[in-house]
Length: 310
Image 1: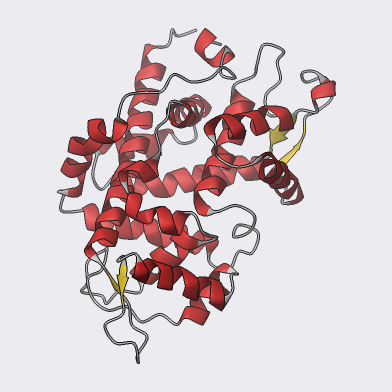
Image 2: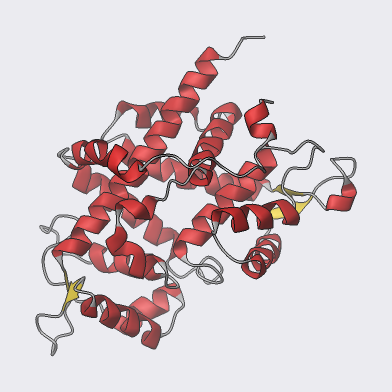
């Protein structure tokens, strides 16, 4: 194991302004004819995973939930000097270092993941038992791989590396490089929402991004994604889908309207329209996700090719 990964508990060195650095690449990706289709395809898969799933929709907001899962895999695949991989102490420290979530939320998330069958105590003899090491289960690995598959299927519409990644998803070495690449970038200061500040209001609320994506996916068949037309999804229905209250969804939408992100052209019908800053935020966010996964797949393929053969 390389020294860089042995020292993963050390504080990261922040990179320069990644938002400015990546802006030209994101613009090139957004200009591709298939970009709207790629966004809609991944959005539909993402919403489908959370729709009606009470477990996935509780405890952490959308950004925290996704990164916490990746951090758990990262720590499992990157043991420290004592040989400990995923432990409560290490993931709490990593959440604190990156300001992902509080100590209490991190501990609660571990409890929830154990209850769901996603992590379990490490078998006897693995690392120092006093640290109470945990390991991801086969079900957890499978759920993460399927999430990556849906992203790379969308990336494949835009970049050949997506097809290459799909062909290598069952390769454990490829998975290791991808998850390390994503978390190393996160620890170095890269934040996807930095590319799409208009989404911050939604990402900070329980199921906020899922509500926004479900709303956008309710567009008319001839309306591109993100939609420009009026959307008419009952507020109560959105709440039921993601196990949040009607009041929670209504406040979210009202706050977005106050911020100039949504418009209600006809209050009597309850219709909503995404305003240009919000549509731009969605396209920037999807472009940033696709670039991140394309880059980590490309780096993973290069690292595997360069590795000495036994």
